[in-house]
Amino acid sequence: MRKTITFLAMFAAVLGLGVAVAYASIPGPDGVIHGCRKNSDGSLRVIDSTATCPNGYTVLNWQQGGITGYEIVTSTAVNPTPVLTGVEHQITLSATCPAGKSPLGGGGAITWTSGDAAQYMSNSAPTSNGWSVAWLGNPQLGGESGDYTARVYVICAVVS
Image (cartoon, rainbow, N blue to C red; front, side, top):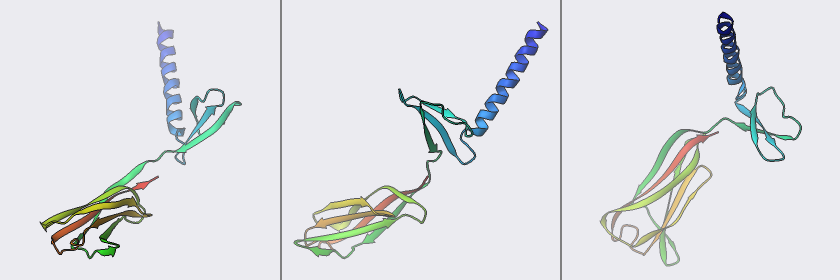
């Protein structure tokens, strides 16, 4: 009985040490998760940062990362001056992410506080560092038939 308890205690200690070593080296100290893809069936296995893939496997490494620093940035303009584009007036407004952050999504809206005019969103798209929205409308767009607020928002984050 005493041998069984001693064996179990030693087994638990070795198992705990093995788990601690595996935990400490996956991902590696550089934040990279190292893996191998079996060429014959595509199965994956994660390996220690100091190990190499066996024959018949292809190295597959990836960063442990994600999205951090999430925030929504808005840009607002009251009765912005439209630009005549053919027979319609266009308003373009942009919102910019802070330095070091990337745009993930965005959009915009026009809210009338008095009056009304027909307008529609003609473009809503990311820029290199933010989001831009354009609206087209009839000649009354631009305050001639009321007051309005144009608003654009962009969802920004650090992407690693």
